[in-house]
Length: 134
Image (cartoon, rainbow, N blue to C red):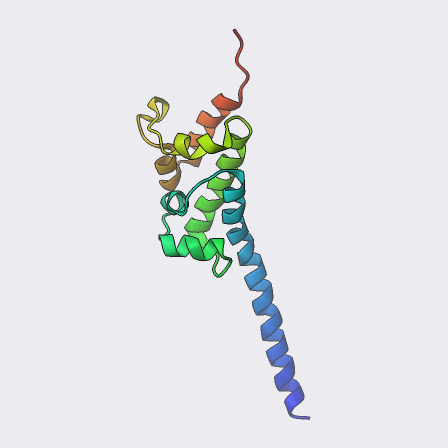
């Protein structure tokens, strides 16, 4: 009978741990989703989030998940990639992200994003999304 409370404590811990892991793996799934939207490399994702290559690899294999600022940058990269996929050829998205743009003071979009400039980058993407008239 004394084992029952211990089993309950262990079960509760296991349930909470699984729940926490499931929630955090949702962020790892965003890294996978980015790769489905466009052929970004692990290096691209690492550069945009400030993570190391081995860390990004762990995200892509669902062994770990980003937290804090890295999770925030990853979600922003996902949002930008999704918007770009609607207006650019998928293969061109990594090129666009790594190309210095005059509209960003000749900075690369991926570096602007990494520095927390999602709003600035979002305005540039909005210009691509807007229909043009001749």
